[in-house]
Image (tube, rainbow, N blue to C red; front, side, top):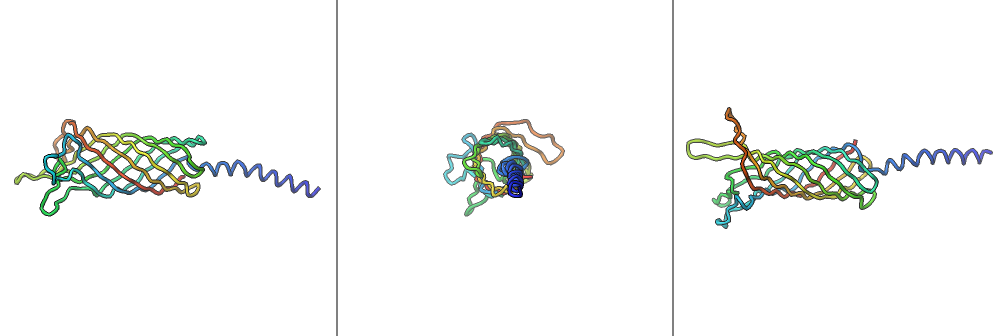
Length: 220
């Protein structure tokens, strides 16, 4: 009788533990937050580059860094979610041995970048997610110029889209790391004046952005 009771208790514990273990294995669901950082390259597109000057570097490079939040829905083999991100960058133009790397826009440095988008992926292992992403990005270029009498120090407000792909590894149910490549294209802009003048009308631009980013985050 005692053995039968012990077996029944063991079976009950196993029955209760099984759903909990299944829920614990569901590692790609819910609210998440992370810090991100990596390589950032902003390149002047074909409509604004300076192909006639071989010495003129058509890109600015630096380190992008920031934070992201998102929410994922785990459907078993597939994961779908939404995310938002805020980053800044050290990329800027500079002088190399007296040669100004004009970038097609003048003396600029990359400002903040906002991103809102979605991602969808498939589990290639119980703790590994491969995914693609896409959405809207709004970035700033801080532009500095001087004609000898007046200094121009304003922001270009850029609108565009972003696509990318990455891999995420769930270290446990609450902690994850990921790495991804993303490409952004900016095709519309306006000048945000830093004084009492109204913003400019929107105009066409052509900028490409390539980033390789890594992140570490937690799920709540």
